[in-house]
Length: 162
Image 1 (spheres, rainbow, N blue to C red):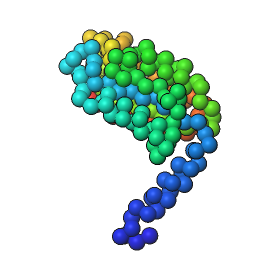
Image 2: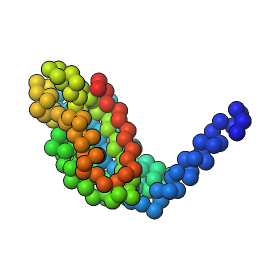
Image 3: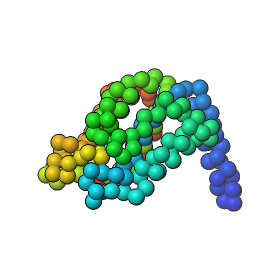
Image 4: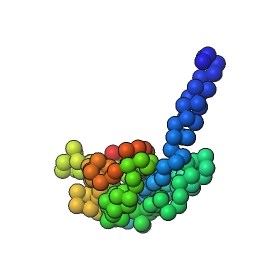
């Protein structure tokens, strides 16, 4: 590979890697929150980014994910309860050989009283009780390590203020 052709090798690697996942099922949890109950937290594009990403995943070039294998939680549907259910129930379905993607476009925040505890701020998070109403980031890790059988996981997180 010469300096004038820096992308050739990378494209070969991506094409080879993608072809390895053609025969497995592909699953995704997609979260996009632009509209919060606390309107001061509202974002401009998180919901649209999540919706566009879900559409991309369903195209042939985006992975060919089946719509029924995508759990999409946008704005009012992205509550702490719904996200917890997706992490605990939806992620029990993929097999060991499957591919799982998790896309998060929303706010994140440390707990004011315990800054080492970091949370995803869901649609229904109460700003006066983040610890009691938001989703702890450790719950995502716990779901991926203890609940999910799939060994291939991709996480994309665009979480402001985390």
